[in-house]
Length: 178
Ligand SMILES: Nc1ncnc2c1ncn2[C@@H]1O[C@H](COP(=O)(O)OP(=O)(O)OP(=O)(O)O)[C@@H](O)[C@H]1O
Ligand SMILES: [Mg+2]
Picture 1 (cartoon, rainbow, N blue to C red):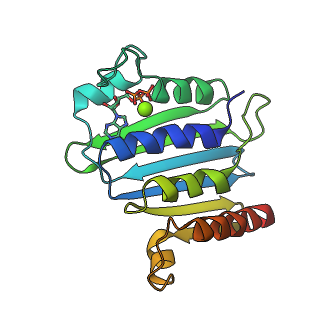
Picture 2 (picture 1 turned 120 degrees about the vertical axis):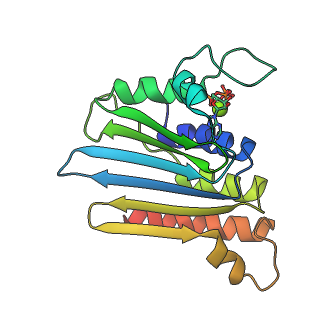
């Protein structure tokens, strides 16, 4: 069973390839609605309607190295297996929003996985991109903005090893309290 954090890694990778400067990642766990909704929005180059129509098809990809694009089809299959669905909304030149819904209590719903390590890997690999993260579990939420973090680093790079180590611990602690 694939962790949700690994899907997030894949989907954010698409945003980075699409040259996004800002990426918004939201995880919403709603017990009354029995839903877990992951939304990833970017301001990258977007897709035209024809591409959006094709991306849920595993034999479509704009990659030239390999024929089959798997990121979105795998996520879609996983959501469908958990009583949810995948929505893709994209505007060419503006950006893309991917919304993946899972049944929160569904027996096949993958665990969330290590969001602290996932977020830190984004900051490590793409320090110039800004990330806005929000994880809400019913009444409780945790938010993180790299714009705020960068403003508080007093000149230190966001991908400095000590900054990354501190951030990973900080995120892990906040996630554990949700
Ligand atoms: N955020 C995005 N912005 C612009 N285009 C996107 C975005 N996400 C997906 N696409 C387009 O959809 C295609 C399919 O994406 P998908 O993740 O399924 O496969 P892939 O990235 O091509 O390959 P893989 O993920 O298996 O390495 C991409 O090749 C790209 O053309
Ligand atoms: Mg991909």
